[in-house]
Length: 138
Image (spheres, rainbow, N blue to C red):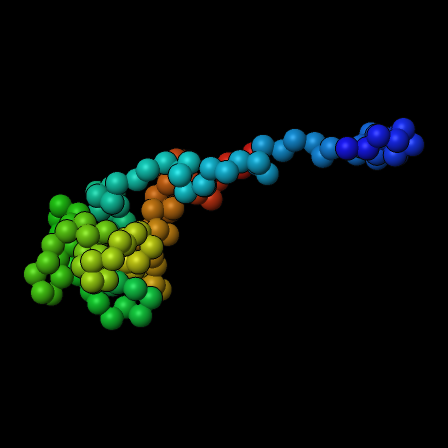
């Protein structure tokens, strides 16, 4: 700690010269946009026609593994395993945790589309808060 007044005065002058930036909530927010987006059940994509029962979904960007979409929203693999998009993804990843939204794809109009993209389209179509708009200020 400084004891000489001339050093104290210089230090105080430097402190007083600091101009704080205006507070911006968006800068200081630590909440993930994905966590503020409206939750969408996978079955809603099926119920609203974004996906069809019997449709083939492909796992991973290489699309080497697949599963059929059942009418109840579960997937069935060629080896007979059935479960949610997350469970079947984990099955393909030897039990590792899997976010099925990010790893499953379908073909739409000749393009590969992730389930996460379909979910965003659903949110936007129904004017639900999305990960694209969450936290934005209009």
